[in-house]
Length: 211
Image 1 (cartoon, rainbow, N blue to C red):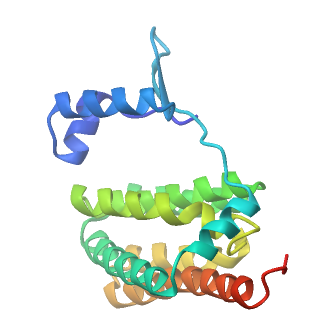
Image 2: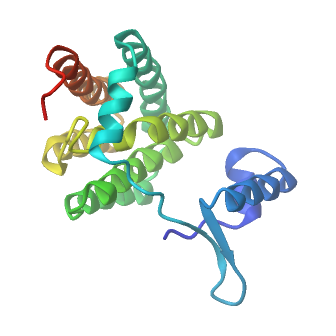
């Protein structure tokens, strides 16, 4: 349901030509991920993507190797530590205030699909605070791979209470320009989610009939 920025704003945000953004949006429309409405209240809006079922999540976890999960964790830790490093240097107070709001907004989400969306939004806004289009693109790609797995009851099954303290500590560290704390908290936060998924995978592997 979110409205995307204008094509010019997206081009500036990602450091590409407007023509590239226009082509990308056309591809997203074709796959049903976004829709464009005309008129004064128009624009391009995100269409809700169906949240995977518990069974789909379990099948995915059963098919992915522990090495791949660990490798994913390594990549996201590296990208996320880089993001908070630069966010500590570049985030201004209005951005910090928005991040506090994003952390609280997650606490108000009640459905796993909405929680996954708000979780992704928080981490995307942290990446925006770093003012690095390349880091932002990488973080968005990683979030698209992990968010539904983290929040699905068939996956890690995390809850807002599980991550709220980490999100608060990350924003506080950014506000205080405390790079070390921001990086350490982010690394623990990212790794905890993957460790939970590894636990689920091992349970499925050792007890195939476990629910």
